[in-house]
Length: 182
Image 1 (cartoon, one colour):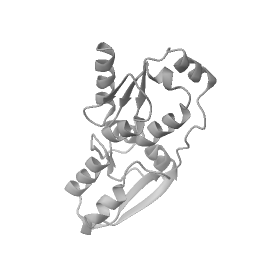
Image 2 (cartoon, rainbow, N blue to C red):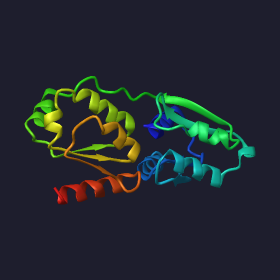
Image 3 (cartoon, helix red, strand yellow):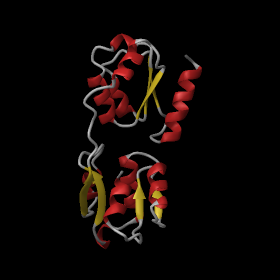
């Protein structure tokens, strides 16, 4: 979303782009950015990548972000002496309810697994699944990281699987492994 919002805001594509993961890096390349580097991980990995490739004294780093972020990239970089200009270019608005179709499918044990990519979306699901605890007992929750898994703890899942690394390929591997052992 940050790539799309930034690309919509400017025609310039001559910036070096640092992406938290491969999907974001692919989106940046598809938007026309040529110099794109993926941290292949989480916010801490992105901060480490930026610090290894740039010098704080060379100028400010621009962070195209959501109104609410999953981590504190700005804080991590500023602690290392970088000047960070963060702009909230988009807003991810949490759902206010699960659809009736989804609620019925969970209650009738028709969903075997659910994927969770962020602590925020996991916490939102837990809130929206109130009253569906029995249905969740039949589901595997697959979390992108341990931080995501922590937010899933209030529900009685059949199992919670955590990806070995914080990227989509590892999440899908955790899903596949969980379903093979179910």
